[in-house]
Amino acid sequence: MTSGYPLRVDAWSDIPGLVHGFLGRAHGVPAGPFTTSDVHDALVRAGESPRAVAASLQVHGIAVLSPEDMPRAPEDGGVLYAAELPEGDVWVSASADVVLTIRTADCVPILLVAPRAHAVAAVHAGWRGTLDGAIEAALAALTDRYDAHPEELSAAIGPAIDGCCYEFGREHFAAFEARFGPEVAAAWRRTNESYFLDLRSLCRRVLERAHVPGDAIHIVGPCTAEHPDELHSHRRDGPHAGRQLSYIGWRS
Image (tube, helix red, strand yellow):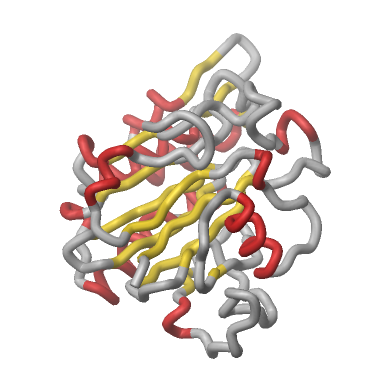
């Protein structure tokens, strides 16, 4: 992986036309209300030049969105989808000149690419979304819409809070074990009183369980909570923490 922000997957540099990256706090957006224009401007400040940007109100769910299903507003300053933001935590697309974006402050940003099918996805995977099936929803949508199967995908799991810092209610462990099997125990660190969850490790296991090749899954960037100069963290900074952007799309 390259140093500095945006963080990128070196192996993806050979995929023609692919645009992707994980931004840090220097190019983030506020915690409060935002518009697609705010997201577009943050990408421009980071050195990108997207023609169109797709963004959503994330609700820790599994709803799948696609810019191909949305009415297109007239372009205004490079922002194609400037109307009211839809709700959803998964974006999929095979369209050129549309950059899919998600915002995180500890949750896991996952970018997926299927070069043959020319399809991409961006997933906001907090613990609720992971448990409810946000990753599987993205994989199913890529297969159903674009004939892009898990075996041919590559995934990038971006900066998120790691097991060193993410104290997580032990009462949820049984639900994850019932959903994903006993192997998920490896994603938890236990002390006498507390459980700590490595959500990125768990997301990797979910992807592998769905037949995404292990050598095509890339962990990108550090723990958000441990790097206050680089990354926003809700667990560290509280409800006023900003959000960093992750993005993926195709040039025409």
